[in-house]
Amino acid sequence: MKPIKRHWWKECVFYQIYPRSFQDSNGDGFGDIRGIINRIDYLVELGVGAIWLGPVFKSPQDDMGYDISDYRDIYEGFGTLAAWEELRDKLHEHDTKPRGDPAAYTHPPLPTSHPV
Ligand SMILES: [Ca+2]
Image (cartoon, rainbow, N blue to C red; front, side, top):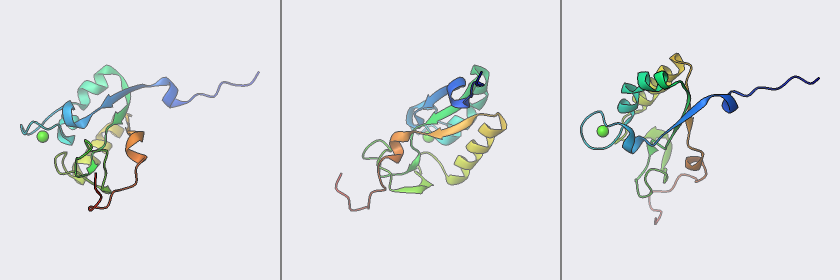
């Protein structure tokens, strides 16, 4: 009998986070990466194995962050690249995998002059 091939992504709990509305850490009314970091214990308590994270990349925000202008940087409303790295590292400490929203990767970065 052929052994069953197990895949982590078929067996763990995914939790989708839309960063803009998940948790605001500084009172500006806009969810941010620090807010997600502050809620990691809650996510771990739920038994979450992977985070499906909406786009936090640099963007003019004409399409709620899906209009990414730079995949190598973070939109300032969400925080900094250092905050993103802290989130990634803390999730890994809890054996939780951060995963980007696939829809955010289907569009090439827009030039700043692109008419949206
Ligand atoms: Ca905020």
